[in-house]
Image (cartoon, rainbow, N blue to C red):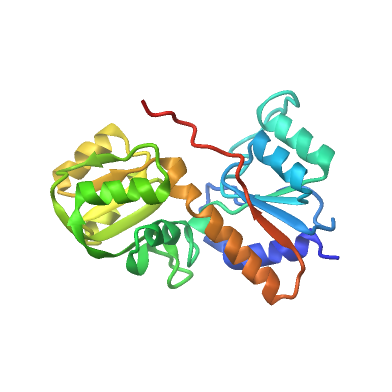
Length: 266
């Protein structure tokens, strides 16, 4: 019988813990490493509905991108929020592992999946890792063909299933090289511009950072945090399944379907 620790060894081949940022809490979140596990559910966030889905399919492990715990934890209310998740997981015997910035910087990782969604080629790190050649935060690559910013925005919206895409810069500008960063990408604007990219595809761009990008002459497409990272959930699940199969471990891997975009666009 496959144990959780065997599955986690495979996860950490896909998303090496050494690539995680110092402020992050990637890694094993809760559970029993020696517990048997034959089913894994992969999702973006450790939400109550995700654990309900895991319980329905009989998963012994949930793998999410975002961690359950950030910063100092002073209390857990079992009726609400993270406390309710911990209570439900413990009661059902479901463990949790988070591959957050470890998967952001992995090769391939979150931004590779984002670039692949629009057919980008020649992907390389936007901010290369000093420890691991080929890894690092963000990616850049060449679009399949030159296009306008607004046409690319429409493609991004379609391929990511995004509720909306905000365009920063001139919609009619022709672009051919793109930088990518799944999730919150405001901090990557300088790197995207320095890379020589024509357009930066990401999420959660703040107002003053949008003005900064315009001043720099960098077009930006903001497709939101959820859409630019959720696209990588299926890629993470496939990489995990391939790694398990390579080791001869008989474990089923499911892609979560319970979570939805938190915004409604009108």
